[in-house]
Length: 602
Image: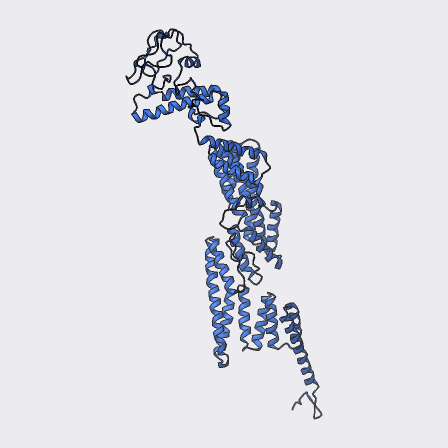
């Protein structure tokens, strides 16, 4: 028979038992010290002391449970799960260990394991009457896991369809359900309820999914902040490094060379990362297109530049600041080609995209917001480009609006102030008669071009040319004929033209601003007309030249020597015209050759 090792020569040896008691007492003292540090919030100190107690008493379930609690507070969820499993192994009745393990699994993003360990705990409790009071809390925890699973399924479903707003809403609901103590922020500038909130206790996997949503919504500042938080805990996380490169590219906050090096670094940690490979190839290809367009533009090959910029825009699906600049460049090319509608369209697209990239949320930024942006100079350039396009289309209201914003962005630029004053003057003019438009000439038209346009318009709308029209059409033509005379009265007079061009009110129909041929509301003086078109008025008989007689007969006598040989309107003038030109009689409604307006019949 083997003797008891604690007995010697029939005497019981209490030394070993006393030693064990001393070790246990020592471990309990250390545990008490650890509890004090835990209550004081010194979780690293508590963790170290619990580990010391475990070293003395490696089979004490309570010590493992306590150390799991400290590890949980330090967000060391994998370590906490390991301690919970050891605690359950030593003490299967410890319901708190099951619940803590489930919580840690959820924080790691392992919802299946979280549900499995809760079901294990529930089965164990149901088999032991003394533990059945703990079943109800387990059911609550199971319901929470099920709810979180539902949110996550929806989030992944929306991510597949790239509905980033809905995906982030579902994901953040899962996070808030998991950790109700998280204080949500109400930020009207962001679609995220967790903007600026620390999420250290949330699974890295879920945080990366949230970053993906933020990138999709172009909430780049919050995405950058979240990326930094992930990398501060795991500087070698390849996906976080890829996202950092993507944010840098979208914001153009780093050079292309640095962005490419970030992607190469991510591939060194994860050679199979497809996102890093795709983005690296895409950036190289887009840089080639942009460079080709810029080189062609500098060489004056605008069509070639246009084609290169088109290739960039077709290939680019990142839609970052680089796209904004290419749209701006293409708008300039369109302007060079005289395509001002297309130029305005590209400038508008660029402005809208830049606002999306610089400002989170759906509310429109103010000029003050744009001025404080890191891309304020780009905003300014785009407003000026679009304003120029509006000016070329004579859309002065829109031009004034854009020049006003540009001036607020760069108040010390005198050229912008001058452009704004000019646009306001033209806007003021556009709300009255536009004599250039009436004659159909550009504002830069020469005196000869203005005279030629007047002659053409006067011929088109002269009453003797419209006698076969309806009464309404004749009235409209007469009005236009009168406007043509007013326009020429102003634009043929250098002083009045200068006043009109400067934005002053000049009315060619007023008494102080007579028609180009004298008074009587636009009635032409025949001597002036013949002088204007190179002829003399010699041989004119009695009566008032330029006007018809009240009886309806011609106010002209023998003309003799008139330079005209062409036939005008439907009235004939007899006698004295070289070349045998004859002028037929009028319709009876008007005197021979001239209407009541007194204009020349051509």
